[in-house]
Image (cartoon, rainbow, N blue to C red; front, top):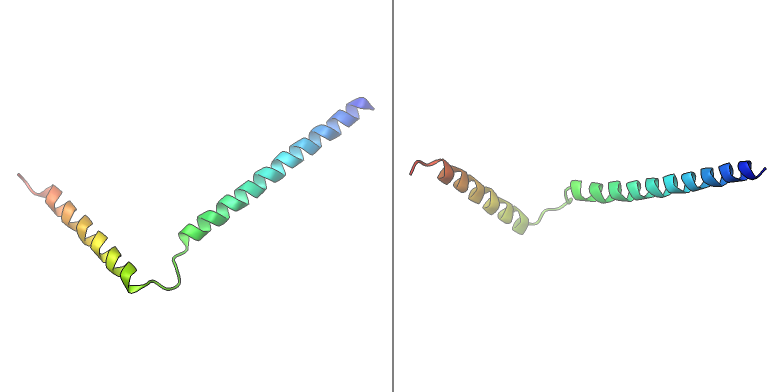
Length: 68
């Protein structure tokens, strides 16, 4: 009887650990989804900043490929 009790307690612990793991994984996935979905409305300021960053990246690429 004691052995069955230990097995049941062990199964409960495993189930609780697994349940906690699943909850943590769901939270992680929800946070990742928030970062992956673009905002519905981008402001003009955002597009200007994005254009500036892209222009700087392109300029740096060209400059790095120039022979000295």
